[in-house]
Image 1 (tube, helix red, strand yellow):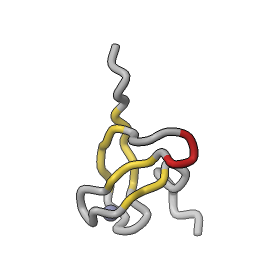
Image 2: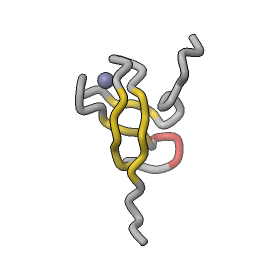
Image 3: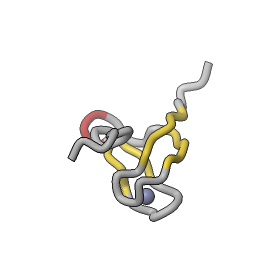
Image 4: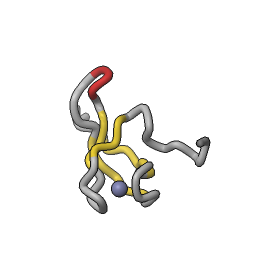
Length: 51
Ligand SMILES: [Zn+2]
């Protein structure tokens, strides 16, 4: 329906969960954390404590 997909991710910087639309594309895609304002690469999003 919409081209903007909102995903739930956990910020690897502040460890807080948030929901955000995916920004960018390819390897540069990611999210902006509303808590610490840092960029979260999609690669790092939802990391469940593995290092
Ligand atoms: Zn954060």
